[in-house]
Length: 187
Image 1 (cartoon, helix red, strand yellow):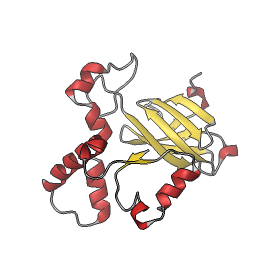
Image 2 (cartoon, rainbow, N blue to C red):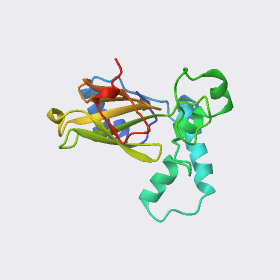
Image 3 (tube, rainbow, N blue to C red):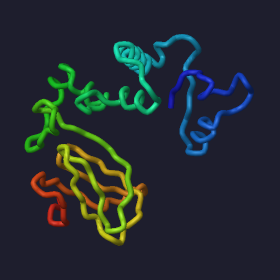
């Protein structure tokens, strides 16, 4: 992992370690700091910061931190910054969508909407997901009640995976049904 020398990332000048550095070390992640002052080393994130500053400068002041977080991560069309970048002309020309995928509402044809969500299986063995501005309920199984999971969504294609990497369910959402039973499995 590469970061700049911000105090939250680097305690070397204070002859110590930050919690962030200790956690990366514990996980076995090789960690490097950029050289002080040349912003080119971390150019992509520096460019993102510039874009974010310009965007926020054009907005009304936020009333709270939560409003600022929402404003900086989603536009009025509820697309994430990653999705907006993917919509650039270069990205559209270079990445065709596989046949049979259905674009999420509000995105141009030829664009796949990806997202990842962390949740828990509820007591009745279901997970709820917002799809096309509606809630759909995905049956996972009562034996997994309370299990922390991640939902990996690519348009209609959904994978429900435990934090240990076990695939609990792979399905294609049927937008005409609120409850997505086990009959929607993908092999």
